[in-house]
Amino acid sequence: MSTKGSCMCGDIKYEYTGEPAVTALCHCTDCQKWTGAAYTSNAVVPRENFKVTSGSPKTWDVKGASGKSNKHFFCGQCGSSLYTELEAMPDVTCVKAGGLDGGAASLGGKIGVEFYTKDRVGYLQGVEGAKQEPQFG
Image (cartoon, rainbow, N blue to C red; front, side, top):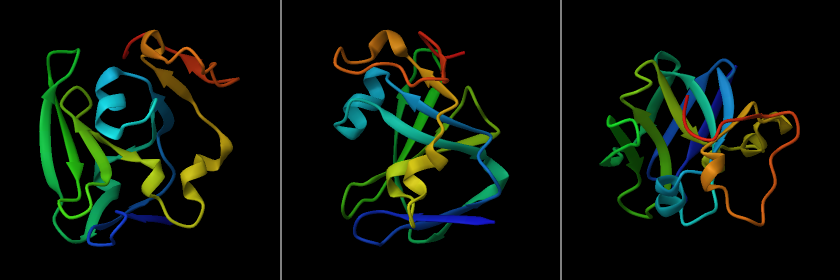
């Protein structure tokens, strides 16, 4: 099974095979700033199962709370957030679910974990059944 996605303008296309290792929401302030939203929704997939199939994303690195680098990939044309690669999690890619095609942004209707719940905005509640982590890990 292959899940495909793209940026808003279509310059960058990507896909991953198989099921995500986990589906996650991240409420950290870096994710809030990067997306201009209250949180990011993510399909966390084995890095070996992910590939960019068209275009060349731009990157921007930031030091995460772990002290390690978080590499953000985005479209240089339209600015869409695409995915992150975290030095703290070298074997996975965190694909931003909003860019997934064919309804896959819903992540199958199931969120496995919410990270940085300490930074969750006050008008949101935890997702029922999802593990709640005040920070990462």
